[in-house]
Image (tube, rainbow, N blue to C red; front, side):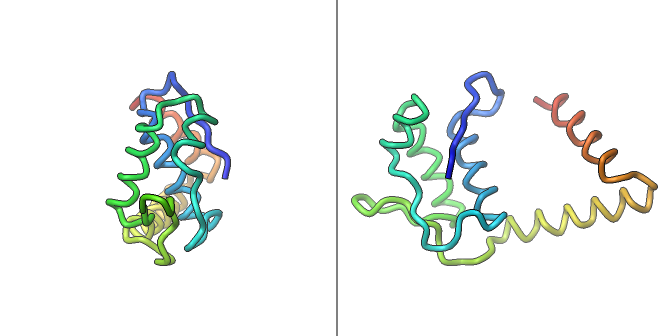
Length: 121
């Protein structure tokens, strides 16, 4: 898995890392049992503090997405779907249905979401 962080983002570095793992798990790019990069390696590769990576991993462990053990590393938990992923999937389906009923195309919906996200940051 390739990680990227944006130092200029309003989102913290740890949250950026955690969000990328969440996305990879939800999309199936990361499967149960797969190992995440060692915190020290990832931090060196991203040129950030190791504790930033550990904070991201700790958040993911708290959410139940990964198992984090000293000496063994971080592994994606065997649960195929997490509660937040199921909720998000349902909300996305609802949003797409609503947009369709309103006559919005998928492209128009995406543009509206991107515009809103830019204003929120």
